[in-house]
Amino acid sequence: MRIAIVGAGIVGAATAYELAGDGHEVVVLERHASAAEQASFANPGLLAPALLIPWAAPGTGGPVLRQFTGRQGTLRLTRGAGLHSLAWLWRWARAAGQPQCAGRLLALAHLGRYSLGRTREVAGALQADIETSRGMLVLLRSSGDLELVQAALAALREAGAGVHQVDADTARLIEPGLATDVPLAGALHAVDGEAGNCRVFAQQLRQAAQERGARFVFNARIQALSTTPTGVVLAGESTVRPADAVVLCAGEASAGLLRPLGARLPMQAVHGYSISAPVREDTHAPQGAVIDPLHRIVITRQGQRVRVSGGAELGHAAGVHHAPTLRTLYLALSGWFPGGVLTSSPQVQVWRGARPTLADGAPVIGAGPVPGVWVNAGHGASGWAQACGSARALADLIGGRSPALDLQPFSLARF
Ligand SMILES: Cc1cc2nc3c(=O)[nH]c(=O)nc-3n(C[C@H](O)[C@H](O)[C@H](O)COP(=O)(O)OP(=O)(O)OC[C@H]3O[C@@H](n4cnc5c(N)ncnc54)[C@H](O)[C@@H]3O)c2cc1C
Image (tube, rainbow, N blue to C red; front, side, top):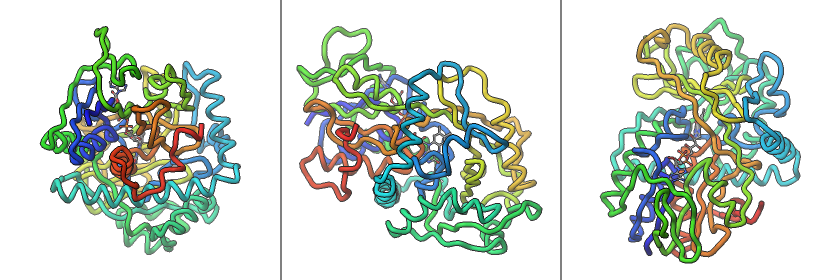
């Protein structure tokens, strides 16, 4: 089949790799000048367990409205956050209390595990160096913090992930750089936890997809999807570029492209930040990944750098970075790993990106609203962790095979 993929983020690149490997004639159309320029650019790269990533899904991380207030508040409305954002937030909060919440978390836990396996297979096949670090700790300042991750933990355990509770001394043996003066009641240790560089992998996937025959066209903005004939219309062109199938991997822009076809995706760009800084002293720096669930912060090791990430903003991307959120991230770094990271280095990189998030926290992977259009989008806070599995499963579906994963919970029809 001739397949046009819209978007060359991590999801589009992984989808191109799988579809080209299945023998399809693939063209990827991307509005930026290279792959992974948007949400996939500088996320902290946590791969597993994906369900513990802050903002992974409703029902994880504690009550959402509490995020607005107090010293631990990390959620804020920025300029342009209108009724749409508030309605989305209301749906997110409501989804946490729905009876189907536990089932959804379980489906996401299965997707995460399936995707981790596929990521490892592909990375192995490509001999990709993606600055992988192993092991992950969720730091619990008090026993009350366990509440914040309880629902995610139950789903992960049911899906077979190995996450164990350890005491503070064991946590400090696993991460010797952890501060000794910060209260620590214990931690959750995911032996199978993993982080890696999402952008680097997206670029390697792009190259591997090209070697499999896929074509990437950059600086090409899709203005509309076409159904008769199936294809895409590029900005500045008046005729349809035809294809047998179109796969929409446009991240936060996916909802806008689907709307004229009659589908209304409750999509919200949940913006957050990351700060990347060089390691100052290896023994004081994180060796793997850690999560501070109270402040919804992720810290990961990426080669000779450390990346800290957090914050959640609803609304348009503001031009100016939110200084208090960045201060919280710097404090988390120096508080948890004193002396480990060079935060005053000129190499420090600050990034603001969007989590393309659907109101129930799960992506859409499957058939679109009209024949010939497929969707792989809305992976929210765990798009890197879910990309390779989503891509493989969708490629199977398009190829008429049964995916190894039940895709029912990720169908467009649920909205
Ligand atoms: C602060 C933060 C922390 C995060 N932490 C993690 C984490 O630890 N682990 C994890 O797994 N995930 C994490 N994420 C989420 C992850 O970054 C995203 O889910 C993922 O990158 C989404 O990938 P994507 O390919 O769907 O979207 P994108 O990377 O945004 O790609 C979509 C592409 O489509 C292109 N596009 C859009 N519209 C058009 C058009 N009309 N024409 C042509 N091209 C178009 C865009 O230019 C873009 O390149 C985090 C995100 C943020 C912001």
